Image 1 (cartoon, rainbow, N blue to C red):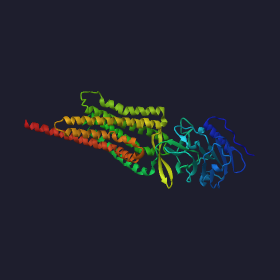
Image 2: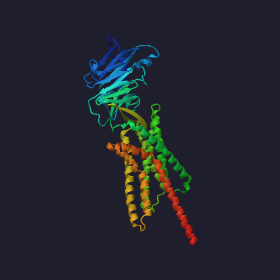
Image 3: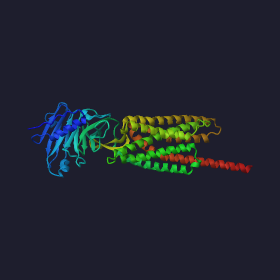
Image 4: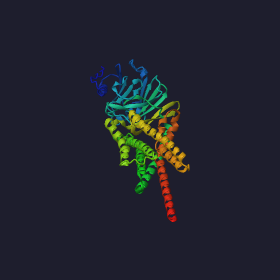
Length: 491
């Protein structure tokens, strides 16, 4: 006598799913398997032993497939599935498979699921993970995925403050054997789906190693250069003026940015607590905003210097600039943490690689901004404004120096030096960051390498600028000293 599972009465998605699983685990039926279904869910229960030899389920072969299941799907379980559970004692196990043809049980934001399907599996009350042989979940479809980043994900319970879980790519690998199939290879049991997010094409996996090497070497050189610059400044801080102090704040922000960037992938590992990654993501965002803000301050200060506004006195000028350069980014990050702390965390980067005629997807994670809205406004928007401001200052400064050079009777020396000064300072303090806005089409690959090279070595370029300015100041001081000595001898 077959006993059908009791229909859940709760309206809460988590309670509905948990109640359904509990009913299926305790339902009685004859034979080795049984199927139950509704218009939105199809469930299957299998009796397994420790001699389990693997199992393949295809929607084409299932009896009484709901009309809602128009797209094909399949699940393949390896022989390793029951080994962990059978190590303690040999007993009958029950494998529950569930096909959800409606996403209302798994609420999510800012994305869609392929075919609106969720395929789930559970082996009794066992926690099955870290399988050597993956579980293969196939989704066939008849829609164009151009412009979408498709990612195999599983439902991670308790990972969201707004819902009873969220979709995570951990432990899953995405492949596309054909244009009409997405294959998920996952090392654990859960509820699986294919997440579709509108985004640029994934980064080719072949570029990951050279880009990582360039970033590691460039950021390490910049860290050493920034530290050396700050030490040299503190050694001779009595001779420094407000311009040098502004440069040092920029060096400090670049130093913090490089250190946080190098730590980001290490703290994004699954073994590291999520709170640590969230904190580092917030620090990295703060460092980037501070760096961009000090770039804009450098541009503003350059405007004052070239505008010859020497008679304007601003009380505690550097202190007020510090309030802007460090205070505004800190305020923005703290406000964002107070409103939406989930904006920071493990940010997944998709990597594509070719496997014969198929395309596979891998993922790497860093601690960074998770929210697309925050990234668009407080990363790209903020960076775009500061870069645009510095480019405008550069154009105005070049025009001013050109007029100055034309008025001088002895063309040349000072105007040319000023031109080199403006070009060197403004290019290093903003222009290279404009490469971030060329990550599309034919510009993508050159942009990736140019942006990585220039901006990972940013601290080193600033160090060269600092050294050139210091040598120039010492040369001018020496020339003035010689001129004073000559005048004394003449008298």
